[in-house]
Image (cartoon, rainbow, N blue to C red):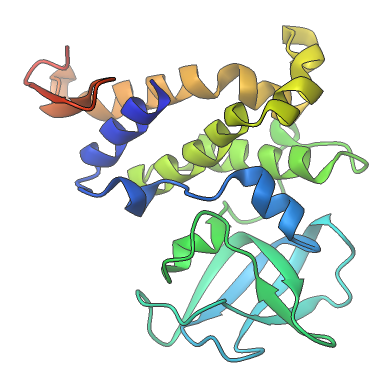
Length: 237
């Protein structure tokens, strides 16, 4: 069901490839594979040379940033960018030699900029999506992604963010750890529990809203059925 929903979201955006807008890397893998997870202003160079990109750290979600500005590189040169692109984002970083860092793939490793970070709204995270300072790194990352989803209007980024959150449902360890928090009251204090509880329904609402055209008309879309077949519907049903 979740694959069908995100496929529809991708097609609404005019994207033909599933892998182009969804995550092939489980969110837990990115979190566990990073020594540092930071949110800040990224100057993203297309180069993969050491120190060619930088992030001015606004907040740390995992580890302690050794400086306000960190230099790092991408695992491979970017194929969809030239020069330097500035973006406010969440980045996963691993050691790459003394004082050096390399980005850990966030959603994939195809060489697209979106593979290596999650774009976030600038500034501080609102109280509604905030988390205690002693929260687990995964809870902090999920809180940031829930805020990104709430503020995002682009279908491509929404599909990637939702795919990352929905990957948590495939982790027995994550579900087991947070299943005790899956009550309305407790979930409000646990971003990961909230994501496990609401991601599917929230995605469905987003798809519905994107499919509603001017004056309430429903746009033509393609739904992927459980057996892999496709059904084209002019009415959205």
